Image (cartoon, rainbow, N blue to C red; front, side, top):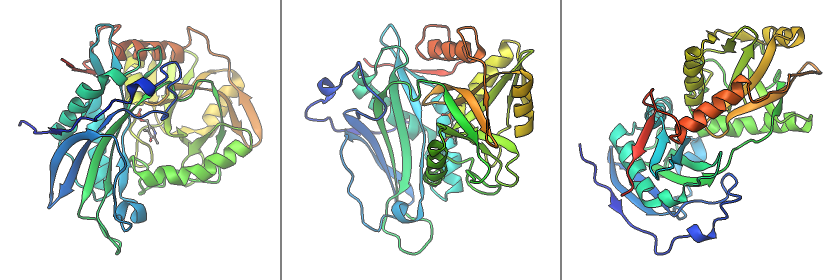
Length: 356
Ligand SMILES: *Cc1c(COP(=O)(O)O)cnc(C)c1O
């Protein structure tokens, strides 16, 4: 199926305004965006247009009842100048999983990929090449028509914009085991990347920060006894004797692409991967006994975010320092090298986009 995309170029590129020595995260947005409208029960009017403000009804459904979801991916440039995107098929699939939960329309895979390709062909010069930098890609969808009664909207927009970015976190984080607030309840929307989940997490995160932590270690919403995620990342623990512990993905845990990639590589490297409900007690005991070597968050924005301490019931358990031979460092290097095309893509995870 060939997909027609209308291209409207920006009159003048803003690329010269970018300080590539300090791109930050979300400081700059690239020249163009991809837009598709869902109207009359089908996706139409696929187009790449200049990045600009949107015009919406004040009664726009997404703003009132939260039919909104997003994805996050990264594009890199290889030494040969090729554009490389890490596992976009996974994000495309997950977008539709989220859409289904939110009563939003599925986006056909070919529209997602054609839109991404058209956008990157136009804006590939925005991809930073410095170490740990990349072009962050933000596909998202929201209900765009005027709706006053609580019901699924009839019209939606799917947009992809991009932002040159550096690493999201750059220092190890201190996390607190959450025993009061809940990120995701059984039967809720924890597995979906829907906007409301993130709005709801801000207050508990601010409370943890006031207490001197950087992030929350989320536990199950029922008993607060099992570890689920950390901040907006999946969380993994490395124990002595080459063991990796992580919670299985479920209705309350997002199925992260970084997580599944790390687990696969870990298995290839001879680690025993244990995906079982993971009690806080197990981890605290392992920290206490010195069996816990590393804990880290895994997600697209940061790739790997080391945890230096875990706060639990008023006590901080400090973790050993990581060095260049630590699993989290080696896996970060493996993934970065893979994403940049420095090492062979034996697992067929990289989508290559020709720019010429
Ligand atoms: C996006 C996200 C992740 C990480 O998923 P990736 O596909 O690795 O980026 C983990 N947990 C939550 C809650 C998220 O929103």
